[in-house]
Amino acid sequence: MSRRAIQERKAEHKRIAAERMEHLLELAEEIFGRRPELADRYVQLAWRLATRYNVRFPPHLKRKFCRRCKSFWVPSVTCRVRTCPHPPRVIITCLRCGKITRLPYKQKRARASGNNVN
Ligand SMILES: [Zn+2]
Image (cartoon, rainbow, N blue to C red; front, top):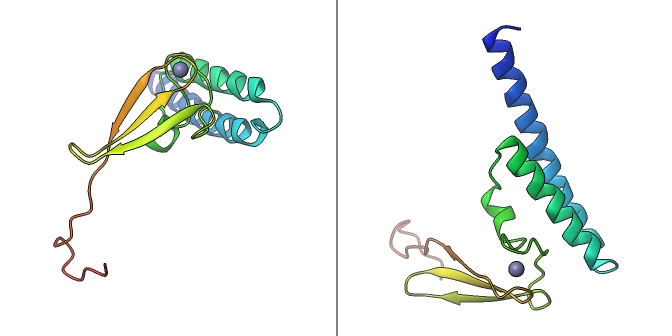
């Protein structure tokens, strides 16, 4: 197998892994109300895919589970979500293991667009 073919196959594996990670977290969201332990299991599986294929979690999936204990996050049920303006960030506290995750966000600049609605 040529080097190029190997690279292409690897990229394909990564793409499939990313798809499955996304799907697993969707399933976790669906099942959480009925079987929360299964939601955590789906997070574990998604994490395993990420590490096995060296795929990063896209930003919208990063706030869905705890990186330390791999529990699925549902605001006010399994995690606490707070915002802090200086510096702008969302602070998520895992209610199972106590891990604190700080995710920075960009503030909308009022003058940037020129036609400010608010
Ligand atoms: Zn945790």
